[in-house]
Amino acid sequence: MKYRLPIHRSPIYDGDVPQPSAEGTPLVTFGRYAGPATLILSSLADGPKHGYALTKDIEEFAGVRLAPGTLYEALSRLEGQGLIAALASEDRRRPYELTAAGAEALGAHLADQRRVADVGLRRLSKSWGQT
Amino acid sequence: MSDPADRAARLLRWYPRSWRDRYGEEFAELLTAEAQDRPRCWRRSADVAVHGLLARLACAGLTSRVQPPAARLAAVAGALAAFTALAIAMLAQLATGWQWATPRSDLVTGATLVMAVAAAGIVLTGVGGLVPVMVRVLIAIIRRDRAVLRPADLALAGVLTLTAGAWHFANSWPGTGGTGPGRAFVPGGLAAFGWSSTLSLSSFWAHPALLMRFPAGELAWMAASPLAAAVTVLAAGSALRRLQLPAPLTRYLARLAQAATVFAAVLLAGAVSWLLAAGAVTPGLFRPGLVDGAELLAMAGALAVAATLGRGLSRRNAATATGRASLT
Image (tube, rainbow over all chains, first blue to last red; front, side, top):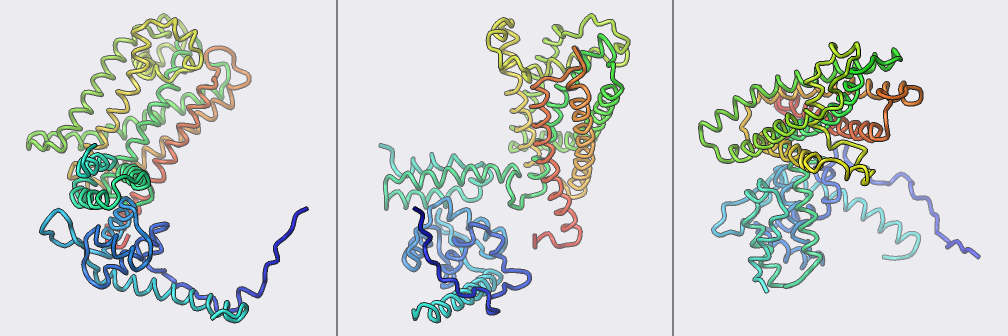
């Protein structure tokens, strides 16, 4: 016998669904690298870092350890879009810094994510009593 | 046990040279530091291998990532070269038939002619593109530009191998001795060369017992010629990517690639017409086999790749022309 789990179906689209900006943020074009790219930009927001420092910082604040291949794929895409820039290095480890375009893109992307988070939390609070 | 630096250097080999030139040192540093944290981690190795291979695909213009025009151009040229090789194999088979008889069906005749004219168009556009590129290669050779010299030498070796081998094995061409009325229409030497250069594209691979009856030299050629062709295409693509092509020449080559893609589409339409018209009714010489169906599918795939990448190239050219390239 098959059982269907009860699913609470409150109206999902009630008019307060966040609408992304018409052009979207540059990170939208990153596909499955949008997550790593957001983490990298967030890490660089407080100053330049090289690859290993980025890995450790992201692991500390997000609990995610980016694998080297994934990290550098996202880094090369971010650099290609002008959202980060490589700095001159004193040794073989090259630090990267956030550019003005990168700061703007990160701000817009996080604002979009915040709107989604706000809607989700508000609905959880309304329907499930979670705060 | 090797030390972390050695392991990092080995892992780095998954990536293409251009990527290593840009990120190699810092990436090796990261891998070494990671290896000190966690000496053995198969997930890390797998992640590097996957992304290295993806970088190689991206370098060849085969992913959605925006590539420099030269890289995209090289990928389009490679796809068109693969298409042309398959088309030559198909046309050589039909040319063999023409040595002995003309097709009974007007549709088959028309399809063959369309394919031949379209193939001539592809070859002409290829020559039109090759001449200025060869001039740039000669300039690079005079300047001793080693980045271009190495792949150019390899491509030349591949071309010489293909030419010499095809020339040698053309002597055993099955069309030799034909007395059909179409014999004067199809240049026998050209058809023989096309047949022997694409000898590896054969349904005999599916019949090992028959294949083993071939002379050892011919079998060796059937195995070696696709390798030589692959080396030629890859090395020529590598040389093209490394040439510093001026923007007007890149635009000219992009237009030629688009023209060649149109000719390829016409040729494909001719091939489909031949398969549909001759498949069920035509006996003997002009009757297509399963290998032709497989070739047709591969040609369609190569054409799709060329058309997709070529569209991106023209969009990029348009963006460059209007000063929007940096936003793509």
